[in-house]
Each structure stands twice: as structure tokens, then as C-alpha cells.
Image (cartoon, rainbow, N blue to C red):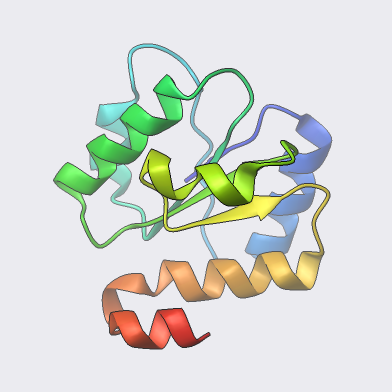
Length: 125
């Protein structure tokens, strides 16, 4: 599942993922949290853009962890300190914008397979 409010960035991310064989499901960044969409789709990976506040991405991460604990979570942002804040918000990793498409594809491959890889394998990649 992918949340990206910038349509140009969403298009680049979507096309990259579709080219790599992934199915994309966009979801709104809104209240209430899109629990039904998350449970129905049962994603291997959720990518959320961090642009308004800490609370909504943190709540979404906690919700996904509680119902789909093996789902990978990536927080994307152009905030300069995203590398320091993502872990405290409950995410597995982060994507700094602007980003390299090959690095993005690598992160998606790693964290979409999170359920299948031992933790030490993820940390060594």
C-alpha cells in the first residue's frame, strides 16, 4: 500500500513498483485510519509519506503492527531528520526524498519480504 500526496512522486513510485511486479493500492491520508482497506488488501509493505504530523503515521504504523506484524513499514519524507525519527514512529526504515529509484526498489524488495527473512538478514542488507 502506498500513500503519497504528491501526484508526480506517486506516479514515479507506482510505475517503478509495477515494473518490478508489485501490485499497488493507494490509500488516503485521513481520519479515520483506513483499517478496512489495510485488512482487505493485507499488504506485504506499507509506504507512508510523512508531511503533516507525527501522530497519524505513528497510529497507522501501530495499527499495522497490531494486525499484520510481518508487514514492512517504510516512512518517506523530505524532512531532513527523517533518518532519526522513523524508528520512534514504529517504522522499519525510511526513504529520503528526493530518492534514487534503484535504492527505492531495493528498499521495497527488502521490506516487502520482511516476513520471509530473518531479522539479521534484513539488518545486513
